[in-house]
View 1 (cartoon, rainbow, N blue to C red):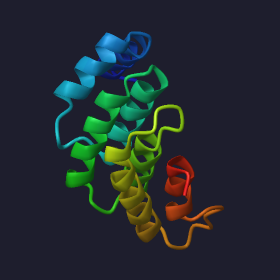
View 2: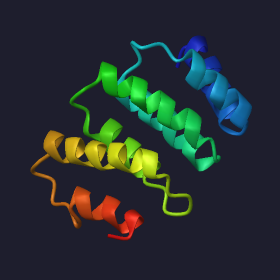
View 3: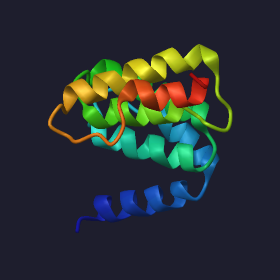
Length: 123
C-alpha cells in the first residue's frame, strides 16, 4: 500500500462520518471519476439525508456515464422518496428506472419501473 493510498483511505473514512465533508467531495467531484465512485459517494450522501446533493451528483454522473445501470437505478430510487413524494421528480424517477432497466435487460426485476414509481403516486 502506498502512502498516497493510505492517506486517501483515511481521508475517505473521515469524510464518511461528516456529511459536510461528503457534500464538499460531491461538489468538487471531477467528471472523470468512474461511475462506481460517484454512485458510492451518492449512496453515502443519501444515507446521511443529503438527498439533494446525491441527486445532483447522480445527474452529473448520468451525463458522463449514460449506459451505467447503477447510476440510473440509484437516481431513480433516490428521487422516488416514499416519505416525501415530489410530483415534480416522479416522472424523472420513472424515466431513470426505465433507463436502468434498458441498461441491464437481463436482470430479473421483481417489479416494473413504472409500478415502482406509480406506488408513490397512488395510481
